[in-house]
Image (cartoon, rainbow, N blue to C red):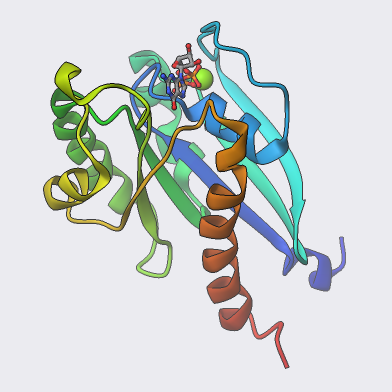
Length: 175
Ligand SMILES: Nc1nc2c(ncn2[C@@H]2O[C@H](COP(=O)(O)OP(=O)(O)O)[C@@H](O)[C@H]2O)c(=O)[nH]1
Ligand SMILES: [Mg+2]
């Protein structure tokens, strides 16, 4: 592979507890059909999509504890962006703090760790928090999302593009 091609690759890792919406988010970005049935991801699911000048590799790791413990180091190494996906419920968000602390050890300062407060369509009375509240708890940049809603694709894509721009500047792809 030419070095110029390598410069255009970006590794995006999705982490989060099971059923928070990681696979749905990956499908949203890849414009795959989104079904509401839940099929737990086994092992690793890798999607490749083109965004601007970049070839994005989306790493969607099965959320099962056994996979997390065994593979997360290899999985996270070399990430250019990490998204921590939560279902926006208090228990899940609090648990995600641990994942963030863990992930920090495997990536450099230049790799942003961004939270996605997913399932914003759920009613607040069932414990769903808005993204600001999630951000206050996690202390990292947080965006609200409803990943099952295809019309949120543009929003998610813009979040990704914003980060890719920073990567492009860092890699001096821009004149
Ligand atoms: N209500 C709602 N359900 C969602 C949303 N995103 C994902 N889900 C559902 O949550 C379940 C788990 O999603 P999935 O993407 O497989 O989670 P993963 O285990 O993190 O990969 C599925 O039934 C999805 O349809 C969302 O924004 N709102
Ligand atoms: Mg999954």
